[in-house]
Length: 122
Length: 109
Image (cartoon, rainbow over the protein chains, first blue to last red):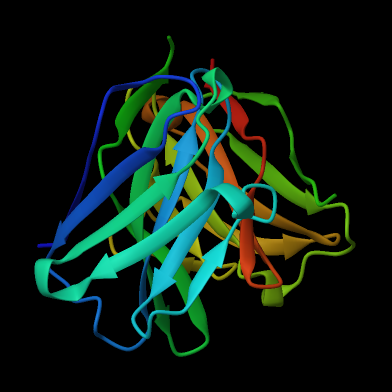
């Protein structure tokens, strides 16, 4: 059974750095073709892809947020960490992590966490 | 700036058929964009429906299908059920990053 769960602060102040952890089970981030992605969704708005990290430690970031994001993994702990610097109220959103998997020529985002709401306010 | 466009809202009658589309301002959507489709209901995390244009996950109901249509990615629901009401998002691949569409709110009425 594959599960993912996000954790981190529910409230951060403007200009602070946000650190979120995605803890997962049922798969390994050392398996070829596997990656973990972060996605966010402001209240009442659309999903926004943020970043992902591959089994081989390759990393990809949203071009619009690249300067503020860092994604890392701890394979032994089955965790992926996302940091976002210089938080602003517009960054208030539910943050999700999801598994990305490459099977042959197919690419899929199959399992998602339940999400964690982060509010940015002074 | 890359923009992925979906119909903001659609309405369908129970038992009917509806097609949602996903367009890119960079040109025609092809299989190389690896279109993925997700369903989201209020208060819930998104649920994966379709990957790489037309492949279904093991949990995807048979009434959902994905395709390429007129230069866009498309999600067709045939024999719509009341529980299909919700928000639908497409996801496309661009040069080592990914982008979601703005979502389509599907009403079953």
